[in-house]
Image (cartoon, rainbow, N blue to C red; front, side, top):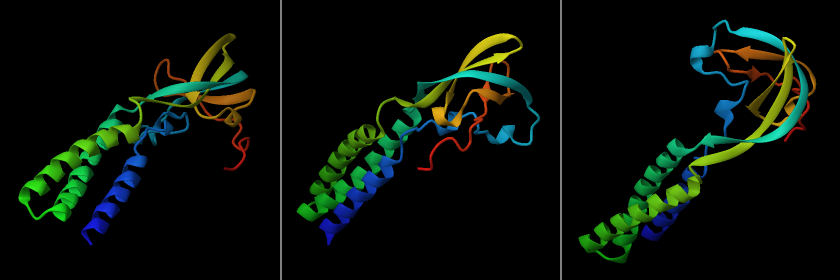
Amino acid sequence: MRKNIAAIGAVCSALVLAGCANDGTAYRSDVYWSGQVNQAQEVKTVQIIAVMPARITVDNRSDRSESSTMGMILGALAGAAVGATVSDSPDAVIAGTVGGAALGNIAGKGVSGRAENFVDGVQITFRYDDKIFNSAQVGRVCEYKTGTAIMVSPSPNETRIQPNNPYGCAKQ
């Protein structure tokens, strides 16, 4: 029975830690923070003249830290269960807890990946006010096409070019 509990704990640990990598969704141009909702934001119409693929680096340190902590906690619990299964001695439970926490910490960091993740992005070259600009956005090339697009500017120098090809990506 105790072996089953340890196995279930290990499976749960892997499942919890697997979802901890930052996928960049929060940085998409069509994602808004709660403070930006119901707020007037300046909108401009731009002409997209080129769309190229890009790789965007997103910070994963926070998720990595959370994975490490969760791995340490779950590892300690699994280690304690294994220690109790191996021996009735309190020393075995303590050793299992400490060893499990250390291994869980390492596993949590390993599962969560690097301190930075690379996500799919686009380089959008666009014309506005007789000038040509380039802006990198988190998203997929198929979400954009040449032609007219809307650009939201919540703050100076911030360009959130909205996808102008919403049905361009095949359903996945």
